[in-house]
Image (cartoon, rainbow, N blue to C red):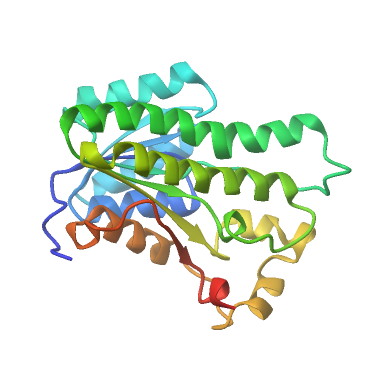
Length: 253
């Protein structure tokens, strides 16, 4: 990948206040991209944007709850206002969905789908409209290995919502390939984040995962960000509608 080819391009990152989203926003800025960070937590989001600017990058934070139509519309209007276009997007916002199916409260099931599926669709809707009109663009949805394989019991809402996000990726890629827009997804395995740490009680967290991963290693947020960068680049110009595991070999087992 040409290190300079993404310089000056604009990118929107949802769920950018922490974890994979924050690392990805930083990696994109380090590649010279102009970054719009989005999230619900203003303090975290503003801090992440400020850290990018402190390193000499270009970044702005926009408060956005991806379950709210008006918030999503305002996010992309702001991105266009700031940078004139949206070249790339990393739809990363997500929430867990713990609980066995028979024990899940309806509101917990609905919350997982509201963020992990409907939120992805609401962002895709704005991104695809803008990118189709400009004749180019690349979108990466952050899903999960759980979107390709049911790994553990006790997280049914999360698994189902991520399967749906994979399907949205494929449909969006098919519908907009002729418009010059590529849509792919990442399927991270266990990544060293707050969400992984919080999963310790439900599914054993990193301890359980290390027994399942061929490398025996938990991944890093930077490793996920690096694959997203590659998907944005011309090196991946013939990659479309794919969900790529970033999982230390788990999906190969």
